[in-house]
Amino acid sequence: MSSSAPVGVFDSGVGGLSILAELRRELPCEDFVYLGDTAHVPYGGRSEDDVIDLTERAVAALQERGVKAVVVACNTAAAFSLSRVRSRFPFPVIGLVPAVKPAALATRTGKIAVLATPVTLKGQLMRDVIRDHAEPLGVSVEGVVNLKLVPLVEAGHAGSPEMREELRRTLSPLRDAGVDQLVLGCTHYPFLAPAIRAEFGDAFALVDSGEGVARHTRHVLEHGGLLSEHRTPGQVTYLVTGSVEDARPVIATLSGTQSGIMGGTTAAETGHSGKHFTAAAPEELTSEALRIESIHT
Image (cartoon, rainbow, N blue to C red):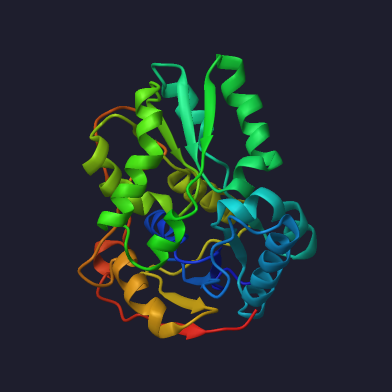
């Protein structure tokens, strides 16, 4: 397998762009192929069998594009599909682990919450990380769901009044209960950081998996002798299973290739500083033309 091959990144829609931004920051000379399954988003309310089937089809499509590794940048897909896709495909498959560990280590109140989809919350992976990292510290973990959030992000309404109302309704009980760490357990949710800050200030430290999965991807590529030897900035090709015309303005805004840029947080943010990161492509790459293609999986 050639080290010059691209890295595949897969999500149910545009949420994985938050992971792609961290990957590009960590691996600026790598080429990426991003596949958003926008024809089938959201995955959060789907059955386990549906999620596994859609994930396997997406990874197979990336294999046809000649990728050297795949990052499953979807918490719901990772919750059920990692072992299956790892056994089926000949390249490294990297998945997301909900950022319960850093949240449990940082909490001052002993109360953390995970904002995620129903599939993610009921998956074995979530149970494992709570058992391994929260329960030994006596930290309580509350799962919270709002199925309206992902479609609003997909529609480009991450900062809309409707989104802010949904966040108030969903997160106010957590603030009132003393939760001080909010794990963003879906890759769409880092795009909500500015709206959450606007509504709740520093009531929550926002914690996600992006920075950690980017570091792990570098480690996997280094260990396998797959790091690109290029010294120039890598490029991204975007694939969508739905409408290219509908996806283009949202991808342009969330990836930072137009004036809109994404604010969010990293797993390193464990205090109440209100710190944000700009999860767009590295500054020197933001003027690149968007290459978006339609694909059937």
